[in-house]
Length: 169
Image (tube, rainbow, N blue to C red; front, side, top):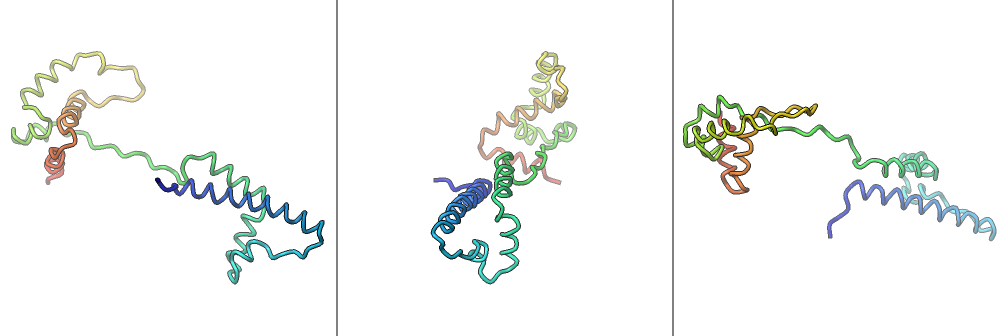
């Protein structure tokens, strides 16, 4: 079974604090009715001899309403921290791509230079490459090079060599 994520663990722990508060309120009512002596706070028991942690507990977790706010905040967000913007791969430098040896070019885009140019000529006027979207598309030659690379690698070791060629200085 897969373990809980950090977010799920935190939700569970805050929920258990809410359950504790509910149980504590019930015990206070029963202790008042039966005239039993009160016990030390949960923060004192939990963090015996650690006044700074007791203070943090009393500040953030002793108030049931505050714990409910924390739980609501956790449940309203999918992630604990801000997500960074996704990184994109660099565009193909077509000049660099065409300066490669024929063998390396064929390894990179899985076709010859002539085959690439022929295919580019066949598809460049297709309406799919021209949209009214607010997000611009990559230039058609870049899209073709990326597509050929991805279709040609198919999860095999070809990708290792492609990346080696791409990042060689």
